[in-house]
Length: 368
Image 1 (cartoon, one colour):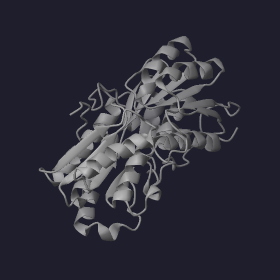
Image 2 (tube, helix red, strand yellow; image 1 turned 180 degrees about the vertical axis):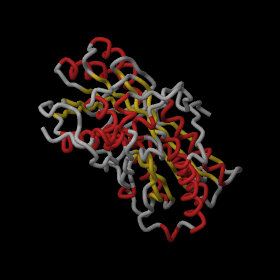
Image 3 (cartoon, helix red, strand yellow; image 1 turned 90 degrees about the vertical axis):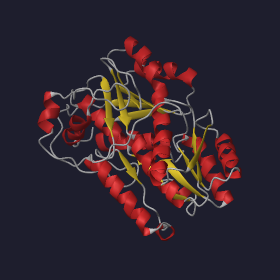
């Protein structure tokens, strides 16, 4: 197995951000292990600008046994190459394979009815860690976790925990807020739109963050919203966006996973701007996608795996945001000249305030 070289370094960020939550804001007491406390004496490196890059630097040798090859499986609701929500998790799995020598496997395009069986199959086949990418994997993880206590289950954006189940939540609302500010700043009609997939707390908070950010810039702006009911149906995403465009919207945002590609396509065809989500989505429509809210899920997955590898894993609900380099904003990719300098400066200052703690993005999980 490759040298487990990064585990001690990444535990720092975990020790700083491992906060037990009640909902997504969370004011519970911090949970740290002795190992995490010791690791916190060093300083973690920031994450890269692109999804798939890792924040950890080589600090000390890992404490995991050199002859241990961890088996890690990933379960996805969509395609692993969707250039969005699922792909960032897949890149995290590949990071564990290349950097830590893990034996990996994944299953994509799982429906809610398929999740428990997929989890149970991996656990029964001796996988050490099973990752479910999305809040919808939470309840199945609890059910299957009871049956396989020796397997560690990680749920991104989950709200569940037990002795062998932990949820790792990204503060995606922070990116949504910045995208909302950008959309409102670029709108000429005073109407912007936002499309989500299936209603759930981890997605509602992004949509609400987008609206809150937009209204900071323009309190009178009209924010039209829609839910496709699907994570993967690009046609439904395009249809929802087109309805908004027909109603005067001139900037479209989304957190609709693969279905969001349809939103971007509709914006491209209409000649209006869009914002991306999860991944730097500019490549999908270079003249259309102004920027994207990027979730550094590989970094989060690495943090979760580190706790398993060094023996400090504990069930809980842990959250990470811009401060921990788990959420960022993608570059403008040559569109700077179309975005006024004062807008770019405003966004830079807001991002800095979020990172420093001077400004806290509201985490509202109630459908408006």
